[in-house]
Length: 324
Image 1 (cartoon, rainbow, N blue to C red):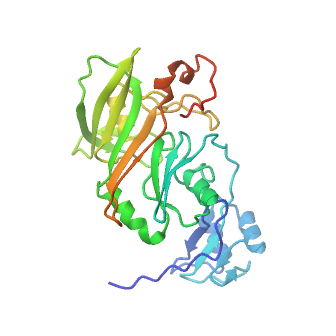
Image 2: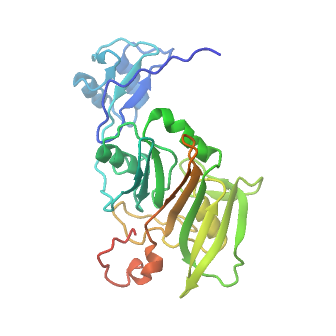
Image 3: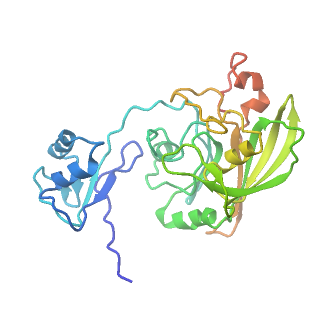
């Protein structure tokens, strides 16, 4: 195997907990200047005038410093620059740290806060907040939770430990337990295990079940019920996108507050009412560095169970935030 060229460290620091964009110029191309390539590569998201301004103001860097506006094209060269950060609606709920040591940071994520930057959610993410607030620029997620799901999320502190913890999730050596609030159906036989094939297409909000070899598996149990709703324990044995939400909807008991299943409902970015009633309750695993048994548990509760009328907007909210 050929030795891969090491990627040089970024000459630009993080900004607001966000890494600069890194590009590598293609080995072949007809561009005369770096500017010509950037205009082609960043179009249509970035117009030529903005590319010119970035170069003129010294905001595009190479390994030797800012790239001059007329710099010739250099095949294989690396470039860095900070993306333009658009205004974001602040998520008004705390990100609670459950555990912190030299290897791991484990947090209790609120509803509506994305785990990592993606799309329109960049600075208002758990990763960006933690890097800023804890002063840990190399922090990286060991796994992810949906933006609408609350609960336990784990991050690695050091790059050299990242693969060991991420591989735990890849190899299904982490026991994950979730809690959900959904309608109660007395005719639905539980507990049961749901197995089916899930497909999630890029750019499409909802995943869907399709015929074929199962690639998803969830254990679903009813813990208790009252007044037409139930509190459920969900144990995913695989980790497909939206797996638990799709499995509950497929059983005819969609999780309360779900804006995607069974029907997609558009919600404004600042609409924090009726959060999805899905909580990542626990993570359990054997630590790959120490061999010790680890267990982390969320301290949150699901509002539709503890105060259903308040969660549904039928009475004024008290002091507790609705994302709890």
